[in-house]
Image 1 (cartoon, rainbow, N blue to C red):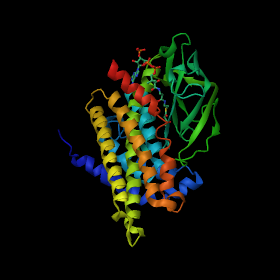
Image 2: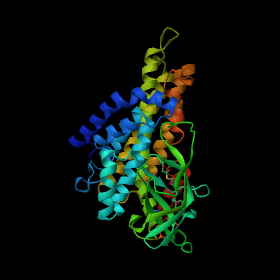
Image 3: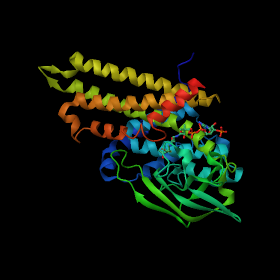
Image 4: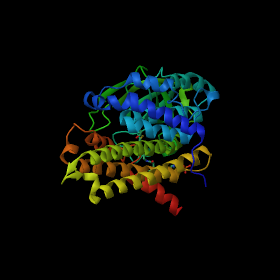
Length: 379
Ligand code: CAA
């Protein structure tokens, strides 16, 4: 068993850590207040190779691998969670296009995502009445000559108004249940596609979360991703990798919470000494660090399995459920350690808790992760 990172993985980690420290952390509070989508920093991240990490170099990506990807996301999330979720969803889309797309689709979309010409990619599965039960989606794509005519509504779509390309799941065969679902690559600006509503969120406020409506939106047949009827499996397989991304983001957020709490505890004096000297505080920090390490190990194990081409669905769900719940606990404890100062905006820990609350919801709730794990256990 080998726990050491390779030289390349360490280089990626160091490079992203420096970038996040210098460019993301200083603007995270302002972004939270203004809800400004951070186009410029996302472009810089693309230029550093961080939007196509899971796609090999020969296909236009940076091919850093799933472990380096996970390490990079941990650093990005430590700096700013809005950047982290935007980056993780974009990488998931870029990888799905590589994995399931034609050579023409690779050539058309991967360079644009990888270079930052597209500020992001988006993944449109969820509908108003199809959340955890994603297979019950109702959007339709009806073949008409060289096009599909797409109709339907997608909700909670990360980066939906900025993504250059959106993976949209829709029924091409209404009689075939989940096996009648297909995925279309829909370009931003396609007539018939509109952003109907922007959500105001509790946290991750600089990530764009919108409702997309498709009304007789004509999508060329060559934009079908994979085969007709394979769409549900393509979306779920993509989410397996996506869940490692969200687990990584959770570890980054928890690291930030732990660092803030430890720094505050060493600085804040009560009863004549730093509160870090009290076991009540020291033990909280010890539990936060231990649980963070457990989450990191689960996450990197899932990433390593993925990188080795081995099955990892169950391990990705274990990492996701544990790391996301751990991040919420870490943010809560960080507030507790800060006392009243943790509840006001002067310190970042209240933002960490607000940001952490989305983690157990998107890319499959905690309940869905436990369903995936228990089904695999009992199979
Ligand atoms: N990979 C590939 N195929 C898979 C799969 C996986 N991980 N899991 C299941 N499948 C296949 C099954 O083998 C089955 O294939 P057959 O028809 O050939 O037998 C098919 O998919 C259907 O499987 P199930 O009957 O098990 O499907 P289900 O309806 O019971 O759903 C589920 C399974 C795990 C509950 C799934 O619906 C799920 O993950 N739900 C949560 C949805 C979700 O995560 N949404 C997140 C939205 S996206 C988002 O949040 C991104 C963002 O912007 C931040």
